[in-house]
Length: 150
Image (cartoon, rainbow, N blue to C red; front, side):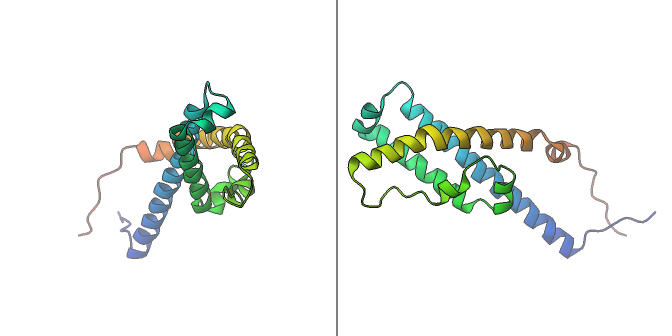
């Protein structure tokens, strides 16, 4: 009976896929966590209250920046799996561009109430699908003991 012994090339490819999977999970987790943090900042508050409270405003803006940076780092192949997320809007998002304070607040409020919920819904669904799909089941199945070549 012959046993396949992993070659250094196949181990390297497996390691790259594993790293890509970890990176994908981290970036999607960042998107989900930051979107949920934004939701906690604005729930029960009107626009004027959110912008008048420095702690809420700073938390919200930090979370938006985490979301934007995560989107920029997410590979295109992963973005293609979630076509309903307006990726281009995230990638083009700029919060400092010489606008008036009112225009800036309008932009941030629109992002929070339109872009963030859409992104959260899609990313959460994708994470759930990723965690429950065949790849997840394969990751959780018991692995056979390594076979040593003699």
